[in-house]
Image (cartoon, rainbow, N blue to C red; front, side, top):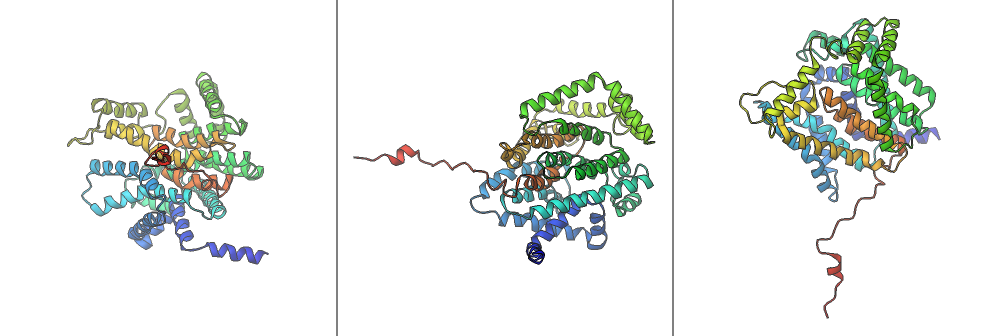
Length: 429
């Protein structure tokens, strides 16, 4: 019996599977991109990205190609606008950056419209994340502030960046993308897909990693998602958000008490940086993410640039004024104006329609919606759109939780005939 299972497993380990494993490792583990750059050069991954994007197009059936193009369109237009703003003279590099942006979007469509090795990818992704969490914890203990230093290095060839990435220490992207996965851990527990012991272990690893990494918003997001443990899995979405709004109100009213409790925990863990950031987040004693930056002023700067150029932002200006640079959403408003706002709405709408709406009638739908809204909240107060979370990790974990056919079983709306049915049925006498 075991021999048959091994044979079936090996049959599924085709070139497609291995390439996707490599792409996941490039997204999750800092050491793999560094080793790729050092020994295989960036051009190797450029080829992998190009082939993968083309594969998703060629594997798309004729009945899906229109849906695929409509889904991709806002992302392509957004990248064209970004190319116009950056005015990069290196056409090859600019094209590669477009493909890197589109890669998770394209693979996500493939995952939602094809059968794939769900159990293997889910287990592999969890293991890769856990290993990187452990190496990040060890690295941050040995090198305090390592995770934060990785977010501030000027170039990829910075000696500290090379040192930390070779030790597989996760930086800004890894820490936040991992925290954004936490609702799926709780959903898997609620759906009885994950043993309570594993939930405790995963929660402990994630909590310790976020504390050691010293990213305040990551700690706050994890605390907020932990409330899902006390919520029924079949809670209506509307009621869930009313409850969430109530919690936010309680936090605002009792923020001094909460700050005192968290400060006590930070002192017990001998993490002074955590204590300072908690006081900054809850009491407003300083800026939140970096004490050399006033986040509020930077957000306001992006808003002011947008208000001065509301239609197309600074997109067509030869001299582009500086924006805040600390909010994906506000910076897009500053750079692209209402045109950029429309693009963001269409991009998020496409992601919701493809990955989230099919779960509408499933238990735990409110948890799924929260997992979708979390990255948008993060994008409003920090940089990045978190497409890996939306397009790669979400379909893998939702298929693992609800079944591998959860997307394929969605009933697609019937196409409307070009000629009204009553006209087609009418007979001339």
